[in-house]
Length: 80
Picture 1 (spheres, rainbow, N blue to C red):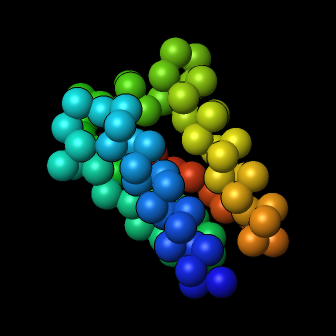
Picture 2: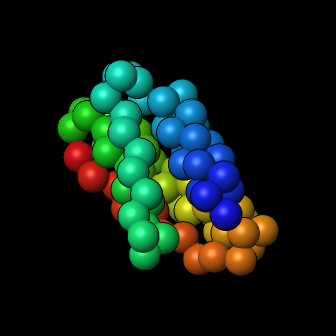
């Protein structure tokens, strides 16, 4: 199970780094209660959220799909 969490964390981190202007400031952390925090630079929060929340909704959909495989329910929180 720990390997699945590491894979999910790496997936979110890779996608987020691809989306932002400052990829060095992207940090992803997993907590015991299946909460994944995505921290980005203040200027990149809008890019992660997207218009009307489309980008963050897509990230959450990926997280939910990965959670189905791992039989867990993950939550994504964006922190600036």
